Length: 251
Length: 72
Ligand SMILES: Cc1ncc(C[n+]2csc(CCOP(=O)(O)OP(=O)(O)O)c2C)c(N)n1
Ligand code: SF4
Image (tube, rainbow over the protein chains, first blue to last red):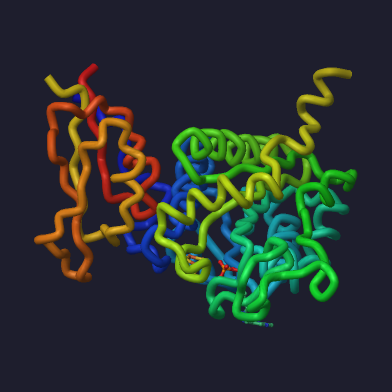
């Protein structure tokens, strides 16, 4: 018999600190597998952010730094510029990236920093107890929007990939989801491509991953994945928003 | 003959049930009588002969509990 699937060497053996059924774990595996398959694990540097993934530096089996809230892309910029041959990536939630860290992220993208951003959109602040995030959906009940988010008081959900598509320095940008095996396979392909582009020094790459937070959504893990399909994907359509490699080939 | 063979690292399991849901053969179940050290109900295979080795269960497991081997 041959091994078709086993725990990736891209992750350490430490048990993940995430809640049962939280898809942060699936995304961690995809990152680890991609680094191993592209043979870049030994020169990868992870930048952990603030949020439930604050401990991700213990899980990615490579060098890592933990950045203050929102500052992951600034830290990644510095590290990549000093160590240009290393593969530098950030792993950030939507509270971290789309709220307090939006400025750092936009400017890193605009400068075309040759880094990869793994952006976890779970439409909520997980770690702090389920407050509304910039990405929470209209009508979504959170601890700070108990009657549901409404446009008049809270504004519309921020569509990060749609915004970043307009930025020149972005080389690859795709929105994926990890709510079923088919989408997980697609997400893996996207993450791998982003790292490949960084290896080829093409510029800023970001993968937005629609991910679950069963605990703060108040759902069972399986129901949370169904909610990604029924509620998140219609608001956050999946697909490639920018691919400079493909554009270069066309021209 | 089963096409796939599953091995579980039960101590990593958090009993979330995603593998049970996404197994197309519906041969996984949560063993309500067996807990791991963390207190979670572990997952078992009801009819191992029916495994097709697709690895969907392992792919959907956030905690890398399942190893899948296939006959080639
Ligand atoms: C400067 C600063 N402000 C606020 C906080 C509190 N805080 C910790 S995690 C977090 C939000 C994290 O949410 P998200 O990025 O969506 O990640 P998740 O926990 O959902 O994975 C906040 C506001 C902090 N740690 N530092
Ligand atoms: S609080 Fe939410 S995002 Fe954080 S680990 Fe738990 S389920 Fe995952």
